Length: 475
Ligand code: GSH
Image (cartoon, rainbow, N blue to C red; front, side):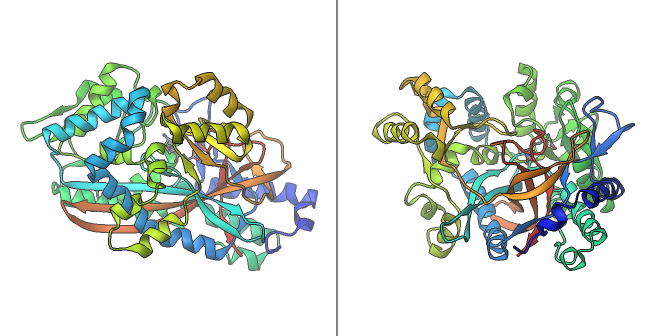
């Protein structure tokens, strides 16, 4: 009800004018992306895809998501320090999933050598959908938490002004004043800056470890710029640069291209395809072994796996991390959807039977990031039956499918026709923390990200070309 009324959505000539205004506004505000044809040049760029209108989000659920974020930060950090927990939680997964196994081997090697750096920098984004209850209210359910390359904190710092402007031009001044400020770029950079300070060398740089193809460079540039504003130098390097010029000195200080690196901020390295050769893995290991602060370090990377997400939902597990804080446990647990093991044994067998009986109620998730990897509907049956009781199934977890209320909107994307779509949204909350030894020196919730996609797509984010940037309109 309290969103943008249908008479506005149905006014074709108004929508057409607004879409033109919107695209120019996005360009003026710097909501940008490089184009597919030239992902490594800024000669021709386009607007990052976004919605014409903000999407209504209930205020209580929004505030609930913000309120639980610092606890999620603590949880991720605690998991990353709990060697026994990670080993037990991931034992079945690493027996069959090569990528996770490879990461786990690095983790074990670092533990054996001893961690060379006691400063930990965590930048994550906890993603939720609002599950529709029978009574019309909605409940906040976590989809996943991204501890690696959690993106769009930069661009989402610029989208509020775009939606405000569109709404004003549409004659919706009241709604325009309800668009929230948002500045994850500053908050994320604040934590990176803190880690840099603690590292304690003026000359040392922040290294953004970036992908081969850099369409999303502007999102990263916002964070770089926040760091430069603080006179903290940043560089952008690929795995290949680290392979060719990376080295450790006798104190394990990391040097790349002759520069000492205080912080490695990984924006690449979360997919198997990112590791094109053994040298790439060697480069990852070199960085992990170094004195540089890693964002994330290898154990925090593993803490973000789907398997860990599933194990956390087992009875008593959250209590392990918050032994004296039942109210924190309750707040976190309230955001969990049903999560089910596919390990071998009677419990896993029960999960398979349950999924086969009603595949539309579930999502089958492998240990992968970057979007587009999840399995839905009848394909769940094909995959589970295809694995035919083999241990391969341990590479996956099963999760309840969340059913958010659809809303109408227009998805603005380069060269896409302007048409009304039935849309579903996902709310992300950014967390940032810095720990030195035993002391949490910073633990903050630093902003949000609303992404919206057509309900035809079951899976996939902005980077994958499915979702678009949006803003919540609190109702
Ligand atoms: N490498 C790109 C970047 O660093 O900007 C994309 C990274 C990426 O896809 N990150 C995932 C994400 O946050 C988490 S692993 N995706 C959000 C989305 O694409 O909507």
